[in-house]
Length: 119
Ligand code: SF4
Image (cartoon, rainbow, N blue to C red):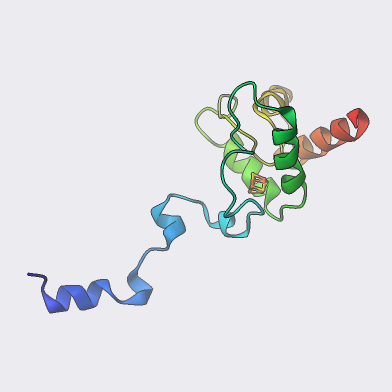
């Protein structure tokens, strides 16, 4: 049987962790443009249609926390090996940016300029 005092303590709204905290999401994720989207476009299977990644990038371009997202990826234990699209950059683009020592905002600028030139 659950103790009423323990139950009351557990039910205090201010004491409960947020779902984001429980899932290990960083605070900036609350403003992510991809929030609520499925992972398919950001973490496509190897060999997936490139249009899938392009759709993810398009969402990232309008994201308010894009620099935070890429900074988070850059700060991960294996930023170059991290799969998926982060801050609108593919793993290949992140590897390239890291090799050049680019800050996240500069890496985003460079990736966007390359896309404009290619498009
Ligand atoms: S930059 Fe892209 S992947 Fe990162 S939080 Fe924003 S929408 Fe999601």
